[in-house]
Image 1 (cartoon, rainbow, N blue to C red):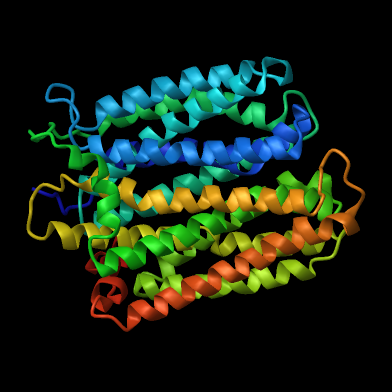
Image 2 (image 1 turned 90 degrees about the vertical axis):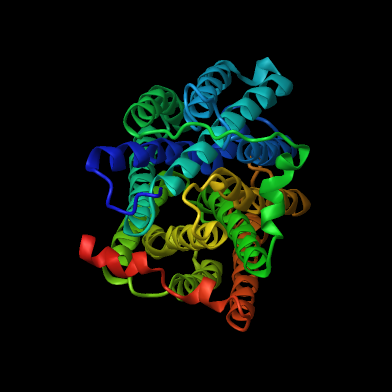
Length: 445
């Protein structure tokens, strides 16, 4: 039976702490990987583009398989623990190989190490998300995802501060972040396995259709399809803004020394934005909250066009405003995902499809994230931008600053249109009605 009581602090910590390391991995991969490949390793922008796309695409089949098989697990060890252990081992092996790689090691070896690291994290991320989804319900579920968001932001602050302190020094920011991740990840995952009770694997009759169950859920009904579209657009927006930020700062704005500082400001303000949302916005329906954030992102995309070069104060102001709203949209989407899982489960006492749901809705997020990053680098290439031979801010404005700004505006406009459609359907209660757990959150805080 699902436990609807608040979880004890140690269990909340165990369920939330891995997100801190995942935030570091995500920041390193989205924002620092491409500059590391083009700068430290000196790879051409075309090669960097397809390596970034490969890293983004590699997580998709891994998450689908983890979602399809992750609810089975082991009758002796548990439903989630075997997958978390396997993913952690893969992270350590592939991350170590990536640290040993260099320009002389060859692009194929570099690509293989990247794929291994991404696949390991995809397995752990789906397993961790499913563990949190099925751990409890009601106010405690919002506690878990609220704390996971805060731990993720704390990780973003810590790793962006590490990058800022390491900027211009050896080892590079990306290498320093990866080293910290490889040390901290097994410790956090060990705490999760030790202190968060794992349910025994349920007996399942194997059938081939289980492999596509996470994808099937995306199209199971109209509410699921609408939510999947929002995840897809959010993934593209996250990838474009995250991947392009350091290039915008370093080339279009001619402020190469301010990139890590801007990311630190973004992440710190994102933590403040989430705390304010948990404290003041708990009675706002999640879809309405999402609509507010989408409008804010649209306006910030337009404002990015007007940010002038060599003006760090204006850049920091834009970064702070962007950071305030940057994590709230994904938080709202995950609350909506929990509502879809509850609606599908109904009165059932065993949420055996938690991994399938968590993995399924991350497929469009990651797929469109990969496509968005690929299109961004294609735009760089088409406009003749090469970070190894950039000719100043004027040359970089069209591709590096204007392109991601226009993409953000377009993605937010489409997202707002989808939300408007959802409000006119019979699925409105599932998307707009604030879950009971939100009403109780203010009492818990």
